[in-house]
Length: 255
Image 1 (cartoon, rainbow, N blue to C red):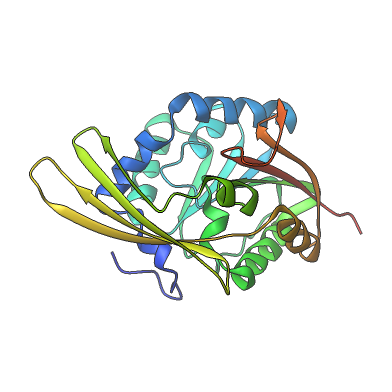
Image 2: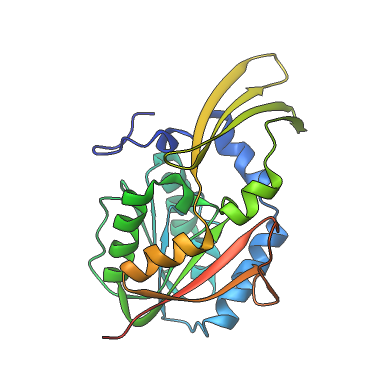
């Protein structure tokens, strides 16, 4: 796959090939269900509310919310994911608009009640691009609109759990990882070697930019948000040092 015009981020090429399918098994369906239930309850979502799902992947949240009656706009740069969503939307006649676009250049033409950036996607971007994305999200929200970010690459998570090398099996695939923790900017660069049952090898490289909660709060504030809460289990357990994932809830400031 070739990046869309304007896409120079190495992570834009990550979710294709074998990894496109492996990603589904990395995120349990039960976790997605719990996240969807949290979104509906916490943000008091009602049929007709407008939700923007950025870097939506194969639509695990976008489709789930559309099935509950929300008006969803789902954006991703990978054409295979968008095509997959398109087929489900057509088959079920869902209120979901699916858009293939470079996320940093996407500008919404309507206002939303809630924006999502899930699955650690926010950490694909360095500080300048993260700020650009946050400003774009703020522009797309109604006054008082909410922004939900899911990350497992916060400094408070990675520093305590960093593993240089690992290997695992996932179905017919063997996956080896080799990671470096680097600085200026703080980031984790990882090489994935994926070997299928025939012995064919696919090599993927990714960069996760590492920000502390304090740095995330500063960027959100600069973009016009107030960081309201941070959970490790959505709606149930506040985030604590070293827990495996974080859910940041920000609110667009009303000026």
